[in-house]
Length: 221
Image (tube, rainbow, N blue to C red; front, side, top):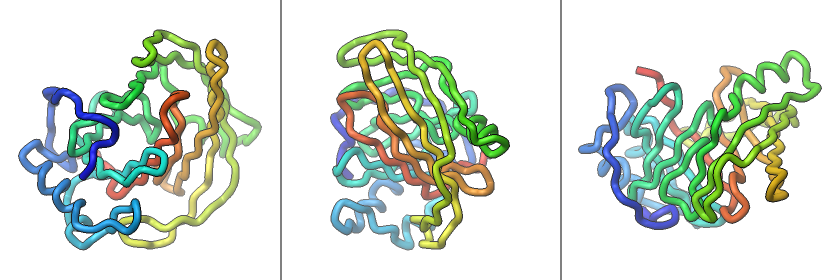
């Protein structure tokens, strides 16, 4: 397993039971994910499929995929860890905080992707939200972020865990940080059960697109 970006200090985390991997079993998941690569993609082996933990794949730009294992559930947000302890926190599929990347972010008053999606299913005329974001490099606090949403199209994708097709709707998120003139377009693939199966998110100007692909979702236990 390779580092997402760079080594970071190891932080103490609160681990709970269920589909969250306890610290002593992290190694099992990460060593298993080293078994095979096809180009830059992890091959989903039987050993990976049989792991009981909630897992995602992450890819930054064109780098190799990295396995993320669920480390913590905190106030409905999920903290995912790589083998080298970079942390990505998501809320309903949206990245809201990172630790260990070149430019870490934290979104304040972050949007609820599924709330936006539900609203658009009723009336796809658009949905908007305002948040604030903190950057670590260069350091900046409380920059206003404006989000707008639309459902883009229907698309059938293959689940990476078992290669089974699943029907999704693709929702687009337009990001605008007026003060630094930053704009981005993020995509979320959402199934009929309101699960964000994968996403492509550009969160800051100097970090490439982050792709998240759900292998096993958290069951909430």
